[in-house]
Amino acid sequence: MKSQLIGSQAAPMGAVLKVEGLRVRYGGVTAVEDLSLTVRPGTCLALLGANGAGKTSTLRGIGGLASATGKVYLDDRRLDNLSASRRAQAGLGHVLEGRHVFKALTVAENLRVAAGRTRRPSDVEPLELLPELKELLNRPAGGLSGGQQQMLAIARAVAGAPRAIMLDEPTNGLSPKLVSRTKEILAGLRDLGFAVLLVEQRLEVAQQLGADVVVLRHGSVAHRLLGTDPELPDLVHATYLS
Image 1 (cartoon, one colour):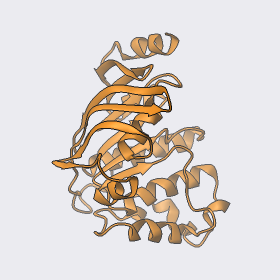
Image 2 (spheres, helix red, strand yellow):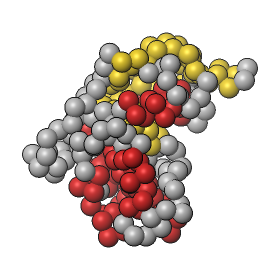
Image 3 (spheres, one colour):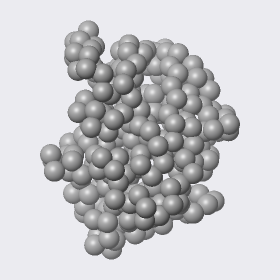
């Protein structure tokens, strides 16, 4: 699946997202233990696993939204000593679970706020990636459907001029039609040169994106596989049941 944007604009300068020895704790509970991963520009890595496996905690630890130890890099720049907002300014985009748009602001205002938080222009025009938002620019975000809010959440991340993008269950709760559209958008981000780190429950999303897969179980890596590995469905299913 190739984005139609390829060839219409220069690919952004993506960065290698690298994580070493990530450990995330909530009080006395360890949610993620000694996790390492690398996502290169123009590729997608999907984190799969049952509820409570540590997928969202991994993204929150990388993004600076949870108490974590370990090293986080964008290329050679170390981010783990920075706040969440400084990590975003450095080029780490994060689409949170549950969308988290500014509901009192219009779509256009949401995008302007996101763009204003970075010191550099975005390499990708969000409305080219998500043209369905153009007719909604003057609508309050709180009046959008859940699917439209998800599109806006992704557009806001792009407006923030990221070099790597993390997305937490972007297809959750969407209709089959919007799931298909979201897969197109994710493929577009990958093809435009971003490093894409994706949390998903739908194995077929990872497979159709050609993503490499890390399967988590109880906060640790159970399997690392290619999305094309024929054993992947059985291994994921067994991990969900264990």
